Length: 333
Image (cartoon, rainbow, N blue to C red; front, side):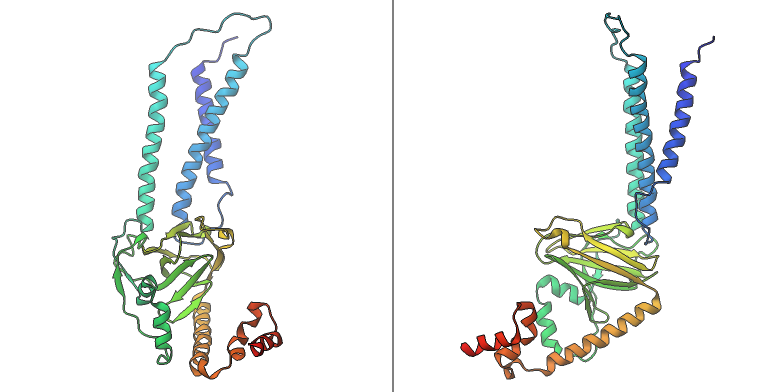
């Protein structure tokens, strides 16, 4: 019986390994639903890396299994193994292949990073509110203007150097459709909309809009991560960072802090809600009216005219005491 050449077995094994790795690399369910224009770029790169990893796993583990079977110790065989020494061509071969793979992945990753906007020049427009947050004067500015402002003020853009994911090559030198100032604090995200004066604990954006997030941190480093968008960017105290993207699918998606920021880091979560344009306009209008009413109520009340119990009454629930208890404590003092 004629023996099958090793080269033929190698060719067949190579075809099988390639087919299996390509199928698994492009039919896995490891990633969440894509919801941004940048997500397919990241997923394509991930699929290539995963395909290569599966192929390497099958080759290495398959070789180990074959050698365990073929070169196993036979019963009664007490002889020494073959004196095998170094093989220069084989060593060059298994060194060259990883080198080519790493270089290829490096070039591919740079191209993906560029398409996502990672190479945008480091000078971008930021709202005055964002700059005020950075200098620690936002609260004072808001309170001083509260008695005068009846509509959302016009905020002039300020040029500030930033790092992060900016405009893609297609949107370079074009202003974003929506700018949101995002501040990370222990342990929450605060979203401020300079164009409308809305402040929210959730990120609301319209689908298809070019959104720019101006990120900052009040205390420690946080990391703004939306898995469905395949985007993650650090928020660093004293250093403005940017994240620019386009959402492509309406829905509600989790926002996670991906940087260990303290004892309650695991609870620093919120969500981004992607609306249709009509739903977003409705949400913005409703929140502008609600926040304006709250602002008018705050301005209309003079704290000097309130008693101590009246001043503290709105906070009794948070303090865990009843209004009657609060009144008795105030009277006793």
